[in-house]
Image (tube, rainbow, N blue to C red; front, side):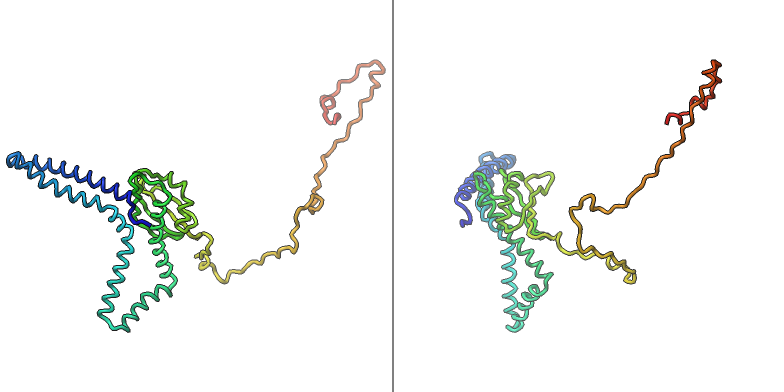
Length: 300
């Protein structure tokens, strides 16, 4: 795999030339204008040239070597760690006997490997170093780049209970929505289960955060502090034994429900009709009382 592609070389060489010209002209004119207040304008013009050209050259060098600086930034943790280990080994071997050197190396390597919490932390930070390079592979291989071929700036990574969290500064031409359609490919490249992305800043949409998930922590057994506050002398309640056969697919006749008898409503006896002897003899019948005429129970 090419460390720095030819397209990137050509693009940053062009940018370096433009930066040199702009810096030399702007700084040279400003220096000439300031110097013209103290000397002849022709001498001030030479002063501007002597000031602008060196500063333009410095800017040209910085822009020209930016791909190399970015590459060193990608490998900064590994370079620092390797330099620290090499320096420690050289100093230890030069100032201690061989037996002491081997004992110290055995302790430095063996204790993290033997103690599970320390071993898990070492593995978690090692994955943080690995995932930064895996994300860079994603951006270089299948995520569309701009004309200059510049990749996003991968800043730093920290371990989380489920994996790693990486902060990235996107280049022009990429957005969160563009990356959301490629999260499954990013997960495959990072050797993870799933990958999530969201903005890390409310004011800058180029500053995003990748959450890489490798394991599920919600299925683990979590100790509860309530167990320690329970009185051990508290009597326990025995639960009823479960039936041997659990009935399923019951019909209504199979359900043994208690029979409920509703109370009967009370009925009043119907009063006998009035005798019509008076009407038959031609005499006027006596006026019936309102209770007899309006008795509703006669009609029930």
